[in-house]
Length: 182
Image 1: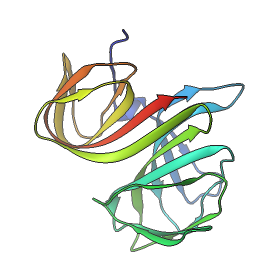
Image 2: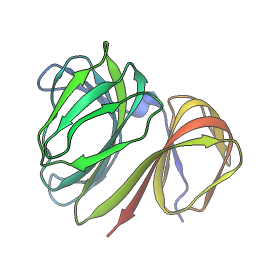
Image 3: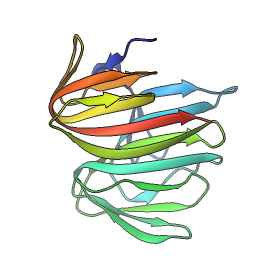
Image 4: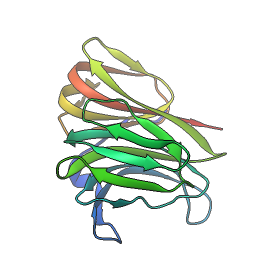
């Protein structure tokens, strides 16, 4: 069984968007076939209104971490408001998505899985009692602190679990992405 891996913000790969409207910090990625990823988890800093990039063959989920939030106009769904503290929105990477910021820059958490290779869920979790992590997952500490064995995680850190079980303790607001190979 592989030990969990602590990832700190300095470990994330930060890159400017091609359209100049924001930044992506790639938290973790699982390589797939060829140049494609099997799954990718990132944090986006959205600075301006604009279109989301399309990712054919990919299922996506997004939730707002901080900022005033945004409205996404998702093809086939309509306008959906997202705010800090709210639930995640899942949608297909093929569809057109336009973003309108509510009141300035917003930071969000993203999970993308290659359809047919992986499925995922994305949710917030309040860590107040020990949490047993099973299977493949990634935990992002939004605030507070958490500990998995000797690994101590502060706000902004992530924990990548490849199999589990891993017991997470502490008092923290978390974002939890669960990943399952098909």
